[in-house]
Length: 250
Image (cartoon, rainbow, N blue to C red; front, side, top):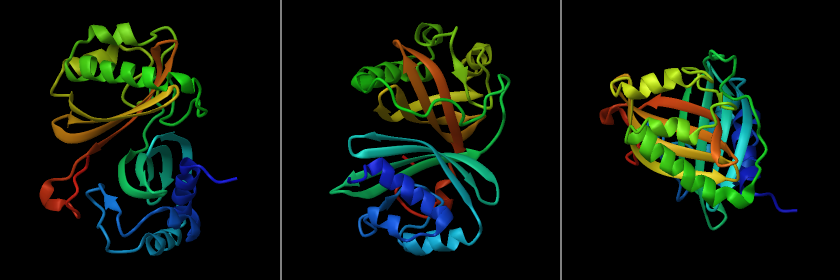
């Protein structure tokens, strides 16, 4: 049985830990576009890079993986020199990965509701509702987070069942409301991408966090037409002068 693209990407990410060169074949390195500003493009083959990284005894855990048309997106834990949580996004063409984005932050928490940044459900449900959930979350991000219509928080979130995994907040939405009301603290400005499979929807946004140019990756779980769970990573974007490739974060 042929592996799915998300299985192939999971094997690729795991090979950072194992050093196995086989999974790297999923990537078309001749056409590969790297959007991590801190990573050189084309300076080192992925097989050699992963082999070198494996010698540092890293640990890689793919917590969740999803597939949306030509895209695979994964929620991951990394333990290199420090423990990080990340989202990885790959775009496929002709059966190979040709483009990559990510958003990584230091692992923090548990939060005030005793949830970690990665615990919770991992299996996709309600695949037939993928497009409905995508549109619903897109509207929530555009109206509540970007436009600042905070009444949409209670309208779109199931407050009695909500589970928050962000280390900055808790299941109680008061702190989130307060942060979003202060545009100097948490300022969502642009929605770049919405990826979805079933009840899971990932949004990729740009803005400012505590005055710093940042990328926001937010993973939502939707049930019965409302948001019931949320995970995220926030990563500051290095100044343009420090980028190691010219492709941009988004």
